Image 1 (cartoon, helix red, strand yellow):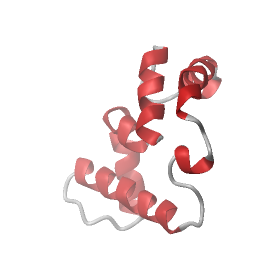
Image 2 (image 1 turned 60 degrees about the vertical axis):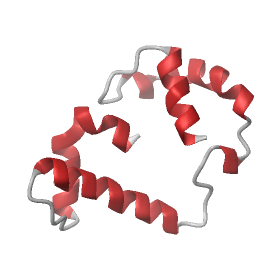
Image 3 (image 1 turned 180 degrees about the horizontal axis):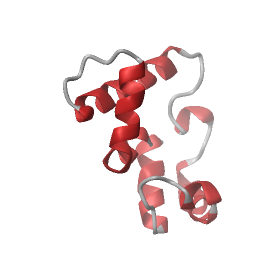
Image 4 (image 1 turned 90 degrees about the vertical axis):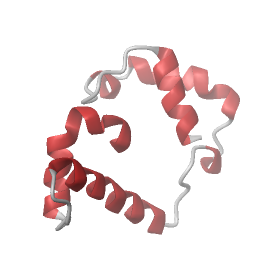
Length: 95
């Protein structure tokens, strides 16, 4: 989701990058470095990294997408998500 939200939350992600001593010269570079560092942290945790690894079946993604679209968390996402198809695509990329 961080990469998805980069176009809408670049300055905020750049601030995170700078707090993590990112070496990027531009805000865009600092934001990307923040995302990479957060991803590395998650990769180091002994947790599933993909929805499929967590036991989520591919065939339920459309139902999950509909539920997610109705969620207040989705409505307050920095980058607007307005369709079930868009949410389903995000979920497929995480599967």
